[in-house]
Image 1 (cartoon, rainbow, N blue to C red):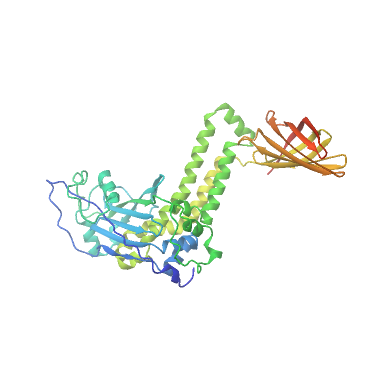
Image 2: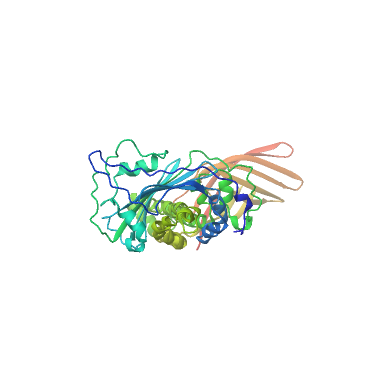
Length: 460
């Protein structure tokens, strides 16, 4: 990351945040306690040092550059409810609603727990962790304890905090908050629940007026191009090299689960046809968890000690640091662990190739191909001429398709087209039967039916 980045400056987006909380009409309100927890209404931007923090987690400088184009604001309702919000130049937004309470059973120092869901326009997550009240300064501690709920916020409260776009509190009380008793003072642990969402309704490219020429292309990886192209934020995060490599490995394990080469796995599928679907579901869940790791870190980094918002509101970092620091330090190991978990679910697949032999119509073939599920070519030879057959599978199974061929020799050329099918029982050999029609220069044409033998070959 460069020590200065002029092209990152000049993009300030007006952001507003809202935390929504309410009390039932018959419930006495808690007298607010003043303290350091106050709102930040002026959008805060990031500097080059923040970019270094992002890259230090394992995300690439393309993602760091994109994050540095955001503006962050903070809205505090009370000492235990607040929302952080970012706006990005491609129209995406991110919000994280923080709810502090007691009685959740959390243990300070334990890793945060995360769940997430994804839709066409949103990536949502819930993050839970605990912090020790003794770690907070006295003035912030008093502000947090004032009216601190004795249980997790009700779902309507959580939904309203994320959904509201204005800055005013709701005119009517929100059902659920009134039913939460205040915790008996003084608790020693505070539980934190964070509801986060990254929203992007349209794929919109970054403003072309932004000068991107000073980005270090050797370090940016592929994520910057994904952001520039307007990909959804969570999809662009998948383009980071560390994430992309992990997803590629997990996808390879998934392919192996779908089409195993291990005899024991094949036998298991024959004995229990549902086993394949169950295994694939497990691997798909691990795949989604890798994206989850990157997306949650992406949002939480805006509350890192080096982020502009925390420089404007240092107290915020004291609340968020237990989760943010853990995710910063463990992104790589978390992703690696998920890859290992996926690979351990499936015995390694050996690479399969096929030895192709046979011929007909005066042509003999003896070649090796990698797969019948993708287009492949086979070279053959006859008396004084050579010919190349090009096969295009008709579907993902590779069991049928179309043929074209071209050949030359002894002063003539030839070409033709046809169709083929592949049949046989595992583990092979298989038969490729073709019917082709073609012509030689001078008008001599014919139709031939030939059979090739495909013998599987495996390598580790």
